[in-house]
Length: 475
Ligand code: ATP
Ligand code: MG
Ligand code: MG
Ligand code: MG
Image (cartoon, rainbow, N blue to C red; front, side):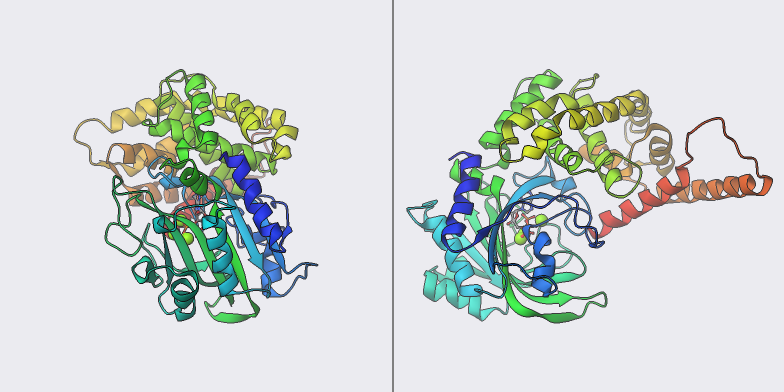
């Protein structure tokens, strides 16, 4: 089954169960929501409905939602190219109940869609479920109503801090709607390394999480207090690319129809042959989706906030092209291939095609001017025997050559070299102090220089990079 067909099937199934089909919302969260960097789940557009502040003419909804996880609470940027299942941009299929049905129907609908002959017809023995440690109600539904054998129902607590470890208490961000959840995993088979969720080998890619059913019961406030929601609700999310891999009988998301086409396009524009074994090809195929969709939703590269995240993703993609030997602008050429693949489902891509491609072209040409010299400096600093990259070098790359911290980290990680983060922070602090002194001098002497429109952004940029580092730490 093609990815596009699967998307429609999902919506059709939930429409047949009385759900309103609602279009995806923008990747840029609504004006009033300052708690979110980008839309990271299907439930975001319904946040106020869950909280009881907004009412809709329906109590059941279903969506295929554009999501970006490249910063903030859910950040998968560092996973791309390293796991079979993570993207920065992906589509989340979801069904929602606003005080209508709760645990029983949520789990039974999911099971029916996955296993019924009329729908996906997956073999039940390949599936397993997790429930929140204390959630006996969900456990009983799996055991007694759905008939999953007890060894396939795994209780999991809130596993804070672990990078991949399952966590059966879902939250959108540090505040907002949240609740215990039950997740469905697919076993891709013994030939792939990995253990079931909760086991020591769960970091492996054998058992892949496909669907999360969240029982929305609380609103977490700024003090961390959990207040009950007006009505218990349901929010589910299933990654389209992951379920597509299952149905197409491939293991990695990058092997599904949509990605195979994109990977061929990337190979063509950078001038190498198609392969599933070259991580940089996957990174570029992933990044063209997040960058193009973000620009279509109005984000532009900049030194601040959302625009800076976009700039960082573009620069990472360009660097991966460079690594593959491509020295000229290539990234913008992928827009046409993406439109061909996804334009039917997302008309905004078609409508903004020229703009997306122009923005990317300009951005990659800008970076190309400093990439080569920056890389030469870095290669020099990384010569034999170096185990930690000097903070001053990381700072120089950032300040003079436009290498965001995470881009340098990406390169160092490929070679198992660690980063002197403290040294980088010290160099930034010194730069901030110099910038402040220069600004004071300018104010005191009232020397207004009017000869150029070049804005001084060093100080602001430094602060921004500190925030990004902080995000990485909580991400
Ligand atoms: P994982 O543990 O694999 O990182 P998650 O628990 O962070 O996934 P949820 O927040 O529960 O993911 O999101 C619901 C569903 O969205 C997941 O079950 C998965 O199918 C899909 N999903 C989440 N993150 C990604 C991603 N980065 N790329 C592709 N699909 C994703
Ligand atoms: Mg995750
Ligand atoms: Mg998970
Ligand atoms: Mg999950």
